[in-house]
Image (cartoon, rainbow, N blue to C red; front, side, top):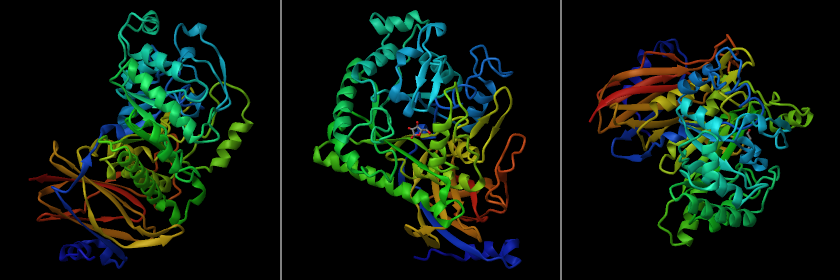
Length: 527
Ligand code: AHR
């Protein structure tokens, strides 16, 4: 396929670097205002607060900190959460939830038990529980996504939790909430049925058959308490689980009629850094998403159902360290409150893979309705805090915040002609990763683009069929001469900056994408 036009050549000639003789690849795209992929659900810009390491204690909560408010919440963190554009937060775990009793985290703080938290080898004081988290959620302006314990607990614990949170009054647990000073029910809408139940590391790990039956019965009972809630059936923990995608097929056979979403989790770890394979891993994620959609649709057909199942990609991220290093940290850690765990530092290269993963949620906007970047603070996080000290953001913060702010509206289908490379496991990796959003309210078409090439710039050109192009409102790029570059406190080295140079001719837009760069181009349009 060759979509090239003379316009690209003209842009190349005007480009100073081209004039200096540097080589450049070419990517040509066509979009059409009527070819729509799906509406973006704002909850794809979610995150995750787990009782793990310093995510809660000295992450979002640190009484005595100079910025702490009357409830002990760090306001510097709240500000960054808003700046990042986080819309939904999953709580309280994670592996943590599989050994958690929500009843430990309510009532007078002084009376709450200190527990051995065996998932992450810590002491849990229970100073923060449901009501404190919900207070924080209101301040952070996020929608809560709660998880129930299907590891060591079961139906009764899940049902009483919904009653405590969502029933107005006049029953044991709703009146208990009122006696804890919370007059009105929260009406929490989304509930995850356990966490990573396919993983043998999970406390109370189950076979697909065991989980399917338990999840079905738990979903049924929870919805009998509050029929307005939506529930999430556990899918696979990662794309290389031996049980994937059979896990989805078997569990959904039980849960399909009772649940609204299936979860997916995926982290890519840092062991392939520096190789062309590293950035290609978002293609593995795409294949994973497509397979799970296919499996949902297979079960739908088998059941002769009209119901569409959606995806909650409720844990995702890049690990800058390998999984084995994290496991070693947990094993060596003495029992203590909020141990320093997995506080990974991200580079420019990590941010590109992270951004590419985020773009996958937009590409499948028709089926992915929730996604939670994991975790919000300190562990594989965009927001880093010092205990008693400052706050800083990692390079991954920026693609997330720009995409959350401007990636709103409808995702458009793309036809892209772009050179590709091959590497282990992937035969055709396009140098340009792209997703295009039409924001009807703002009269904008927004392109999110990554150049995966380390050596060459790409000249990108797009024809916007069905639109009259007015102007480029903003062009932002994030790139670095050294892909290993990181940020630290007082050292914000990797961050985006505005660029000019993009050009408009009739209904076409063209610009240069620097080597190893993340880019956003907002184009004002009329229809
Ligand atoms: O890093 C977060 C942990 O990773 C979660 O507890 C678990 O669900 C996942 O394996």
